[in-house]
Amino acid sequence: MIYDIAKSNRWEWFFTLTFDPEKVNSFDYSECSKKLSQWLKNIKNRGNSELKYLIVPELHKSGRWHFHGLFAGCDNMEFTDSGHRDKKGRVIYNIGRYKLGFSTVTKIDDMQKACSYIVKYVSKELCSVTKGKKRYWASNNCDKPVIDEYCVLMPVEEILACSDESKGHLKKVRTDYVDVIYLEVPIYTTNPDFSKRCGRFL
Image 1 (cartoon, rainbow, N blue to C red):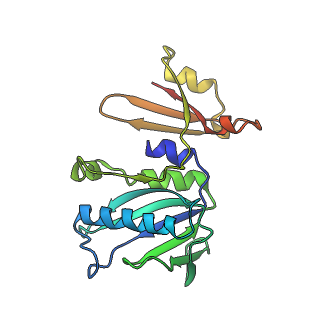
Image 2 (tube, helix red, strand yellow):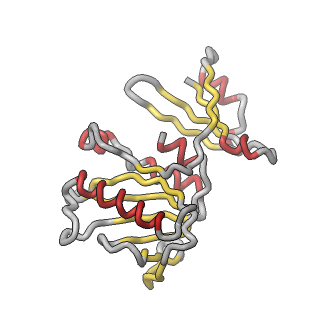
């Protein structure tokens, strides 16, 4: 679901949000989750009605929690230049209205890498320590993909031979029950519904 939402939307910014241990017990996942949810609600109510986000948690090796997110519609949020640059020379911003800890914001220039980056945090370790708890935050205005599912008896090699991988993207996901291959190819159309369409070969 995280991958589907990530790929079905156009994102502008990559956020990282941490917690000041003097304000939030960053070892407590439930407390961090509650504080994050309240902050998101407050930001939307402060003139950011078009805000769109997809956020996932990460457990640092220190045992503290922080969150990473893909964002769009941040026109009314206050970004300030931190004075630092990332490896690509892009400005690293801070969020003026984030008072729970430290924040960084960078402009997304590669949608595919940004989507893959956010999904990698959803590890088996994360799933085991958050069992029965909320594992991602997605705003209600996020687009969802239209999914066509096919039961194909052809070998995977033959399926892939029918496409031009150089013009698309191939991702293999192994679960406890089934292996899923996401094969994405560009569709040249002006119909916006097709931009959210994907196929799953099980």
